[in-house]
Length: 314
Image (cartoon, rainbow, N blue to C red; front, side, top):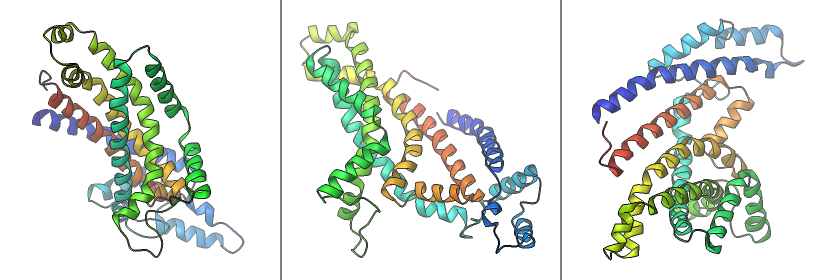
């Protein structure tokens, strides 16, 4: 296992470098951040001085090499807007994003696994059709639209839940306050994931329930609960783990939009601000973090495979 992990890490390094090269080229094609400073009150000489100070007068490959060299030394650069270290900014904003992602993933699993099993056990019945229809609805509704609907009902109409931020302004920071602010963002993210995962779990369970060893288990008089939740579910977890592993990077990207809608103080807010102001160092830092999240999610998925199925070796 350790050799496999080391091998995957060694393979991931050139992949990460390739991702940063593509991101850097696309980012520089958009335009210079100094274009946002142009105006009647800013002289060309001042803009040129700023360009030289930021190193934007150098060729693109030289700019990338300087950024990569600094990165290998543990320096992700400084924001062109706030002049703060990018690593410090990511460290500040990544906590709320990881909290929102982990809770949303956990809630989606709590919904998808029982619903998928129930739908498979009651296949081709009204209950099955109801669950499948709801899963299609959950995965089809755009996240931003569902977020606006929830804000309208629970904030505007009923006044039950706050619609923005992570804490109530002027109030003491407490866990219950964070929980109230998380309810709607978590519902939006979990609904989309659960809708997709229910169908995968249902499909995997339907295939496993037809296996001969489950018929033998039923014939031996093993209870229905143990047959479904111990023997069938364990073997159906392999494709399910793949789906949940794929959803982690998708969730990381989707959280950016939801954080913007709910003004959640995470990486999403920081990323959108950096994109609008063309803050290159911050954008590169977030892209690098996103790539690392994808690679780590894939590695963890492979490791969990071996824990679920002892027959899998690396």
